[in-house]
Length: 359
Image 1 (cartoon, rainbow, N blue to C red):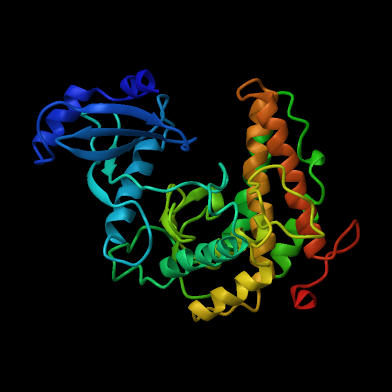
Image 2 (image 1 turned 90 degrees about the vertical axis):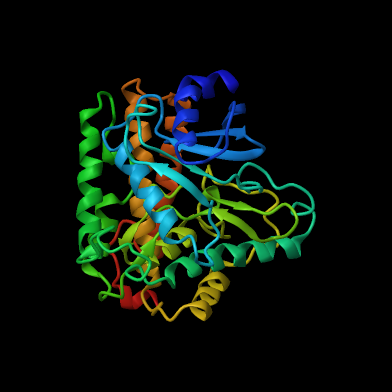
């Protein structure tokens, strides 16, 4: 872990950059690479008795990696004085001179990710697990209540026509996977066309735009060790300005429910005690003023969007550019998500029903 961290950070250059900003003096010590980030890297270290976490692109940055770091840092700076639980930004560097990539420093978050495993007493107390579910909703509701203009995020995303763009945007993404050799194509996923048609035909009316996380679920939050409460929302790389109900739909789409196909990933054990999906929706409604009449549409959109995202790893695996074991697991998850979507729209080979028929 230390060797991996040293390969990602030139500590002498980092120290010089920190010196210029009054962030401690002397040697950088206790450097280690943290697990948990798959798209970007997290490195924890100490200096002058203070601990930091550095977030930077992976060792082989993608074309948009540096801009992603700049956007994340801007977002964290904007919500710094809010009640949204998040890692506290210390300083950011949008330039690539010091480390070869853009990066930022934040305070470490003391907590655990529930997908990795529930520690005691969370794994022993069903009442705590119920509270965890509601805490997940409270965290995103706090974000959605913020006025993105007042916190300085004007221009952070394009909210105009946000929902109108979604179906076509992700359809093109799925089609682009055909560039990967040996990928069997969308025929291996049930109901892609039916789900897309239903979404396009039942588009909800526009709602007030706000900040959305973009990938909000248990894998991207940390909980406190001493309470069933959020310690921080993490991994903000997909954050934007759009329809915040997309985040609520994402939670419900991935929620474990009796009668729905099980998702091979994102499992939490033990599950007993967690609230029902309808309880989460009701709780969100009590915390925000947003109209939830069409929430089923957002859930189906989340199944569609996430399923297509996960299928991308399988397509790369088919070409030998990702581990096949991981690719197959995510393909199975994509299939399960589309099966969930078909069940929600009442379509099992027949014509999708209208949104009005789902409420």
